[in-house]
Length: 265
Ligand SMILES: Nc1ncnc2c1ncn2[C@@H]1O[C@H](COP(=O)(O)OP(=O)(O)O)[C@@H](O)[C@H]1O
Ligand SMILES: [Mg+2]
Image (tube, rainbow, N blue to C red):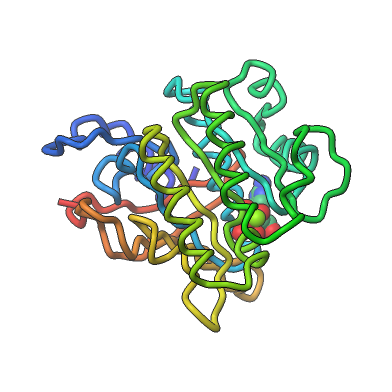
């Protein structure tokens, strides 16, 4: 274990004493080092956007949030996939030792397959309607999510990704309206959510305006390795750090290095 890993662990061991002075209920992501930079965790029921380029680790961060919730906090979660198949996700995350299949059986995790281009998938009876016409996807998906929340008593949600969902809409107004309604419904259910958003350089995606927080994942190729970092650029009502922190993958998933407690205080 390198020194920075040891420092992270040291902070984590001291973690409970830093959940302070905030009357809002905080949902701990459990991602090592991350909760410290958002003053203890995410606000219950609120939706944040997690953005970054392809390969920056968005899906991993999202599933780790759900995996930790299911295993450590008794908070079941739903992963809505619009890109990878559920089987692919289950198999990819085995690399971190996460047994998603078992958690699905135990109703601690649910994967909703909302891929717009899938055909005749039986996982959801009414899934086909998702790509039939323009006005339906958001409302229909919101209904599926609400059914899922009810079924497994979900407290956490990840949508991977909002960008794929939005592509189906030609109309920006409808997209923003759909996102707003979904966020409102999740808030009513006290379901803390992460909307994954591809980093589009041409324009600001509508979910960025609607969400109560924005977290950016960066990665750049160095000679023989990848430089990865994370930055919180918006988190309504939370005194968050504005610094950029290095992140690493290890055998258990993601962790944030060098969380500086002074920055969040
Ligand atoms: N066990 C691992 N060890 C190191 N790097 C990993 C591991 N698992 C995934 N990665 C890195 O994460 C990248 C994919 O992460 P992912 O969460 O799918 O990104 P995104 O959703 O942003 O495209 C991989 O391309 C790889 O570089
Ligand atoms: Mg992904």
